[in-house]
Image (cartoon, rainbow, N blue to C red; front, side, top):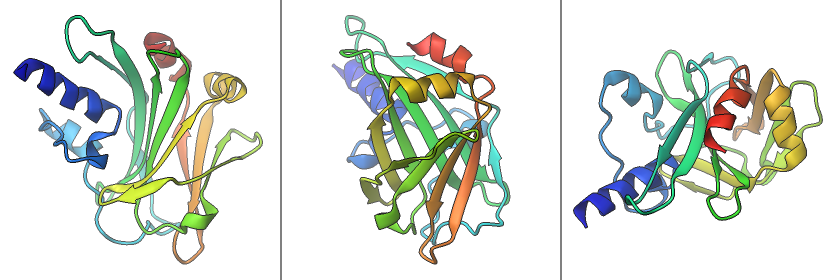
Length: 189
């Protein structure tokens, strides 16, 4: 039972759910992993001129609650402030085991103009408005299914832009490269 519980914590962490409940995320194995998921400082959202640094690209992870349980797979990419290491945007896409449909979990920083929500845009395509559903100590979250047309744009696009407003109503746009999106998505679907 101990192994199953530990696997469940890993599974919840992969899908970004551990920060929403009382489960504790496992300790990172190295400094590089620790820098990918730092807890955001309890300050307002970053200034528009702050330079976010994106990680190397999309990363795929698959886990299972037990040996008999099906694999649950996800891919993610993060953007952090280069000066402080503060997490600005985390985009996690998983393929639900029961429906096989992709679902996005997006983590944004605290200090947002919540009524405005966020916008997602692939390259110069039409921006898609998404509601911010909840906030907690680590950030604010969006959880939404990904429509087939948006998935096609992500697979062929060059850049995903995640935009939101801070409390001063300044729009902040964070670019997320899509160069390896299709390859990594094919591994998790």
